[in-house]
Each structure stands twice: as structure tokens, then as C-alpha cells.
Length: 282
Ligand code: BEZ
Ligand code: FE
Image (cartoon, rainbow, N blue to C red; front, side):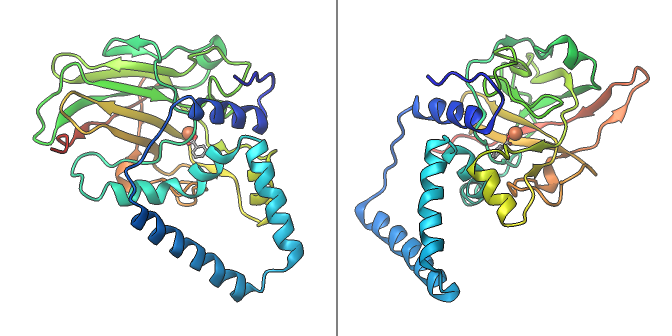
């Protein structure tokens, strides 16, 4: 396990790589399918090399940069910023329930279990920021409440740091596993997240800066919603009118995932959102 002692790209990158490597993934890909995908990928690369007449210095810089992406543990970051949104899109076309969005590199299973009405674990300094109350129901496609459904919620703090990927934060800060009540209802109090800048001090950040792009994601909440016999949803909720909504570096916003909270008379932001889960595939 990599020990991180400062919230840097290399720290969060290595932590994300270690967590990903902890699981062993397989895919049922035939040699024919692998060959077809690899052939097209290489043909695309070949075409762009010819079109842009890529030079030897550029090729060597690319090789060096790819090595640095691996050494900095940034493959999860790089792939989740630039590739995951397309994978999510092609794999969600058959679903009729709540829209999904990318998972990103910072999901951690096993966050503390909390009742349907709860406050996420947070530090005193987090409590000083604007409270956000997210409430609603988890239902099936016909609107029937799903009691005992599980909502895993995780998000960055006001400075853009995720617990377990920045060493100064308590282990489960702003993470929770919430169980809906018998009618599928939940009400979670947390804090309003801020727009999030992906780490800029590593190779992914250097590439983004070198290309003259920006590293920002709009403020967001990550959620994974599950119930027995239903298709799990991995998604994100965003804030209508917020910065970077229309220009997310990870291309992961969708109009159906925008929240528009109102201020209550105690200064909290309050908003409702219902999750509808598709039945599990046969
Ligand atoms: C995120 O936290 O949402 C995220 C971070 C890096 C890449 C993709 C998503
Ligand atoms: Fe995020």
C-alpha cells in the first residue's frame, strides 16, 4: 500500500492505482473481438500520425510521458477523465431509469452504514460550509419505493480533496452508505461541494496545461445506488448554473443529473432527487 503524506497528484494517483489493483478484473473478450478492437485502435493511431506528420522528438516525448503516467500512478485518473464517459454512454443505452455517469477513480466500498435520515461523517471545518440536504426516494421503474436500498455517497470537500486520497482527511470524511427506509425514502445532510480541479502537478495535469485545456470539473456528488434484483446505478449529481457544467474536463454531465437546491430559512440548501432503478438483466 502506498503511503501518502501530502495531497499531491502522485499521492492521490498512487492511492487510486493501489485501490484499483486490489481487485482482479476479467472480461469475456474473444480473440476475434480483441483483434477487431486493437486493429481499429492502431489504424486510428496510424491515421493521425500520418495526418499530423508526428516527429521523432514528439514520439520520444510521448513514450517518456506514458512512462511517467504509470510511475505517477495516474492511469486511473487519465482514463477516467478522458475515456470513461464513452464507456458509460455505450453501456447505458438500454436503461430506462436514472441516468448514470462516470465513477471516476475515488470510489471506495465499505463507507460507514448510516440510517435513511443521516449526516455524512465530516470535520468541524467542513461543518462551517453551506449545508446541503439531499432527500428523495429510491424506486423501481413504476415508482414503487424500494425499502432497504443502498445509497453510497462520496464527494470532495470544499478544497476538492477526497478522503483516502489526501492524507490530511479522516478515513471516511464525506463518505457514507445510506440505507433507505421501508418506503425507499432517504434524507442526507452533507455540505455543498465546490468545483473540483483534477490534480495538476502530475503528468495528466502537465498534458492538460500543455494542450491549453483546463482541469476543472463542476461541483458534484458521486452516488452508487443498489437494491436486490435491480441494476446498480453509478452516477453523479451536479448543480444547475454552476461553473464548468457545460465544460467538464471529464465530459460527464447530463441535463437529467442537475440539482437546483433552494435555500431554507436556516441557510441550508435543500433539494429532492429520486432514483429509479432498472430491473436486473436476465
Ligand atoms: C472525479 O472525481 O469526479 C473524477 C476525478 C478524476 C477523473 C474523473 C473523475
Ligand atoms: Fe469526483
